[in-house]
Amino acid sequence: MRPLVALLFPALLGACGQFSDLVDPIHPPKAGPAAGDLMQATDARCVAPAPSAYIVYQAQASGRLLRIEARPGGAVEDLTERLELLGPGADDFVNASPGGDSLVIGTTRVGCAAEACLAVATRDACAAQAIVVDGKPVPSRGLAAIANGGDVVVYPAPGPAHDLDLFVVRRASGAWSTPTNLTAGSSAPFNQRPAISDDGARIAFACGPSAGASAPGTSLCEVGVDGAGLRVVASPKSAGASSADAYVGSADFAPDGELVAEASLADVTQLWTVAPTGQASVVAAGVVSDASPCVFSDGPVASVWAGRDPNSGLHELKVANANGGDAAVLTPGVDVADVGIGCSR
Image (tube, rainbow, N blue to C red; front, side, top):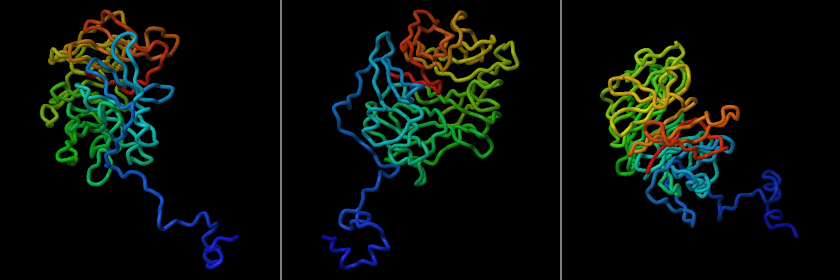
């Protein structure tokens, strides 16, 4: 028997196609989440880890976002598995607040659509919300930083006079503020890879002539979250580099007030401590191919290390004490994406 609508409205059926294609006016298709909607999941896997030392990172091969306890044999959590409970999509980075209560991610989930945007997620990664300013989600343009409490985020974006500037947004009463350009006065066209201090007051970042925190000629810069105190902490020249192609790139704050930075001051990539005066000292002279440092509040340093087996091409997570001793590889045989990592409690 033909459907009643085909008998009564044959012209309509011919114009609109198959009967199954007609829209049901009583049960219209559900729209996806709008950018800015709080997405939450209730699932047995939605358990936040107990306070400890953790590293968040992205796996190179799969692109999955992961969190690992910062000790040999530490448990690994699949944050992407939790985010998938919120809806389909892809993710391009993750960072954690120093205290670990909040995550900032680049993602196409939570209403971000085809272009990845920034979202703030809870510690267990089972609730997330896109950062929306003036009705539009903030696009993801690389690693962002988030302060404790999840209400302050610093991120890179094209600026009026620079290819990349760093902007800060603040959340109050559920709404995000108009972005403030923290690096409008920078002499560098690319300002990227922000790291936020434990007290949320200062930002360390790579400021250089071209894209990438390890581009030749890149310096280490600093600015207050309020926009005050913008300065170059150390340039390759001031830090005593032996090559014109040297750089002082991404860094993180150490508990003693110094910075731990990735740099090529001696023609190889190593970790260096940089004093507030700009004086640089290599952390461990015999350790090379060491990059993307993040520092725990009690001093140990995590990094992305390609030096355990140089012929393998693998970048593995390593954690060591402040002077480079007692080093342990946490992800042997697993290639970690060198897009920035985050340390938290």
